[in-house]
Amino acid sequence: MRISNGFEVVLPDKATMEHTIIPAIEALDRKDMTGARNLLRIALQVLLVRAVNTVILASDDMRDLLPQDDPLLKKCIDPMDALARSTIKWAQAAGKGK
Image (cartoon, rainbow, N blue to C red; front, side, top):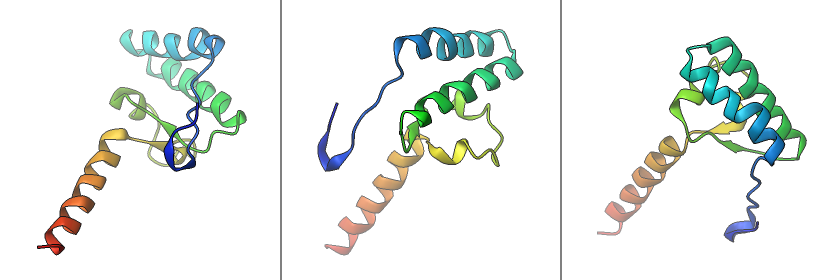
């Protein structure tokens, strides 16, 4: 699916959802952090193999599974952080226009 600004949205396929993402969430619910972390890494690798440049992690719990120095985390965006940065940038630009 294409959206404006040349970005293409790529969603995980059914197999990736059923075999990695959903089990990762279930492992997280069971407090199995190692299992959840491993499954998340697999899901991210599957997306990256599909030529995805950046992954939006919509769950703070998922983002927190990976250590801050994990190379996979550098390919991920926290949508709330991105929204906050954009809002600050917009507010600063609006303030200069007064």
